[in-house]
Length: 334
Image (cartoon, rainbow, N blue to C red):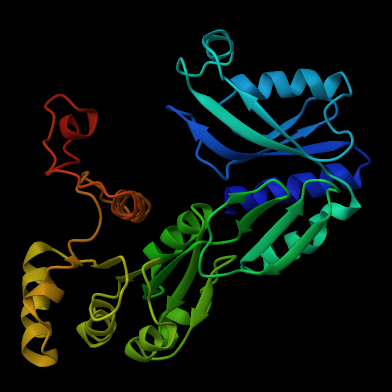
């Protein structure tokens, strides 16, 4: 399951190889309640086909009309704005006073689509610098700062996974979690030294490591863009990973298991590994939002939902079971 960035670039490559004219639109700035954040992209083919999104449909409709008229994928990149006044805001479905700024870039050999696509397919990150006056592109190694930047002369964007997810354990749920996390733009690293689980484990785009969990986490040096989740139910493996993760800068550290097991886990980490109360307070568990999830794919959804909330600074309150819900009536939720 590929992430949005990779899907768009693959579509651009296919359309260009088939002889179509293509233009790539990238949101560079927004004001007001814009539907998509800066960095969101859309590709428009000369016959009006669309990949990606910058507005949920309203601006895309205008771009499609221009593409069909043959006036979109021409010349050099240009900066355009939508929704700058009340009439335009109403026309394009933006809140009054809202504004979306785009760079529209004709896709040509100088765009270096295939080279970027090769890097993304390998799970790498890349810094892409577009010169507005000529349309020339330079691909550079990614840097620690991955902010989009538009100047009078260049547009700098970053591509590839901006977040890392380290999963301890290669069980069934890890399969679902790794696939979904890849789609959300995570670089997924699965760690399991157990032959019976690691043998045969394969998720496209995910890396499997067979080293011991504490060595793995130490070597990967979790930073503020890294999450670590222990999924084995085996204290000999999970506790080792959590010990190192809780002492790191990881933005999220979690472990699967019941509330009772979570309490026992914290006792072990404090007693045997000297973890402080402040470190233990960072441990999410039972991992994931409490939404009644029971099956492995449902639990994977709940985990990624919690990761998303933490990334954006949201705290989700304890849930309330709604009487009359279909799953409750069927006895699926306790």
